[in-house]
Length: 117
Image 1 (cartoon, rainbow, N blue to C red):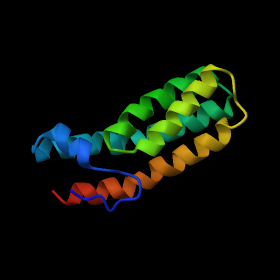
Image 2: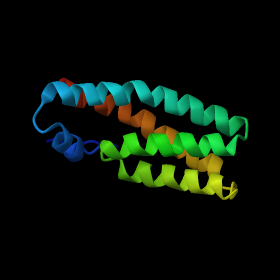
Image 3: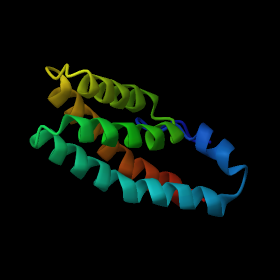
């Protein structure tokens, strides 16, 4: 187990995979393929002020982030979701910026983690 990463914590995903390294690598690959999509969609919906779609995207990204122990990112994505749903939009652009930074920051960590198997 490697918890020397800044963004990801691998304990939960290692427990989910139950020692099946092939499955673990598959989970990492799925999340790696999702991150650019999450980032692009959140930026697009923010730009378009499409708050309900942004809320849905944040909700979807939250589940994946939490699987990889990205608790801080998960909390942030949940706040984005709730703020958008409640039309409390003042801090949403800044929160999206931070969530994007964290998701993008996880990419090299996920790639490094994957190489350890």
